[in-house]
Length: 109
Length: 116
Image 1 (tube, each protein chain N blue to C red):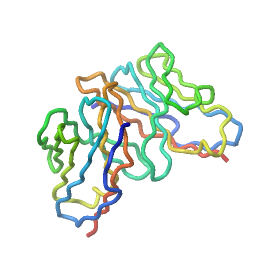
Image 2: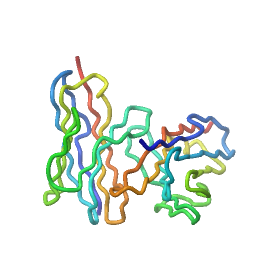
Image 3: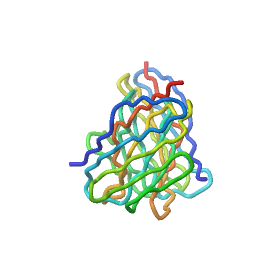
């Protein structure tokens, strides 16, 4: 079956760094997306990885290891507005996004 | 960037009525659009995949006669919740595929449906 595993909730301090891990099992693989979702809003795109390695985009970086079925999202210089849910979503062989419940990130001053 | 709109953003209706939600890609053509439903504190659940000019593909457990999807043009898909009941109250989100190399989906802002 297809499965996404992320921590349910994480807490971090403003200005710090946090890493959100994701392991996945899918029928085929065509890349992995990270989305941010604030409460009551739709998801917004953060990153896409299809090859192994680290993709850096400003304060956010995303890493992928296809052989391990593993990805992480790294958030640096945390700001209060980063409090949201972070969704790891791989694309399966049918190019369908597989969604987990996401990780709720709480930023404290 | 690609923009997707949804209308209405919030709707309250009586049990037994039908509600239509529109999803539009504003600055690109979307051959494929997706309809999701999300209950509080739960993950996004794909309801159906809508392809322009053809019938939608529904996920297992989603009643096609209850959730009518029409994708008549490359920029518009509609979801009609027929004979809505309180258990249909949820956050409905559409997304559109811009057909780029990596099939990024752009999400609409969502529609919050409350059925009384």
